[in-house]
Image (cartoon, rainbow, N blue to C red; front, side, top):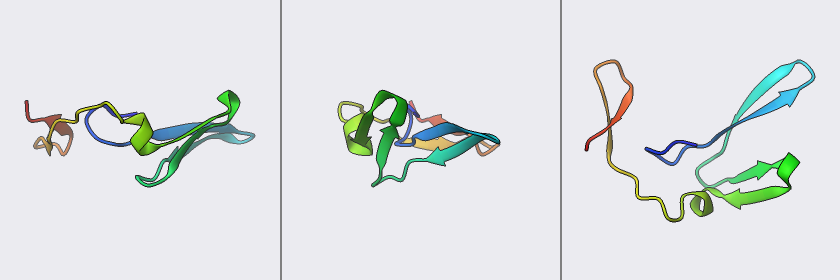
Amino acid sequence: MDSRQQVIEVFRRHADGWLLQPVAEDGRLQLQTLDCECTMDEVYEDVTLEPVIDDPDGEPINTQ
């Protein structure tokens, strides 16, 4: 989960290693081992995100 923008990435273990699965903005976060599923909006429901800009290296930084 990112605290600067609505981004969630899930790493899932498979027989041949780890697989990165980003959650689509309109998708659902599924945590199978916890039997939990929710929308991106539910995860970020009470979060106020600050505007984000990129620094010269292309890394996102908060404007405040």
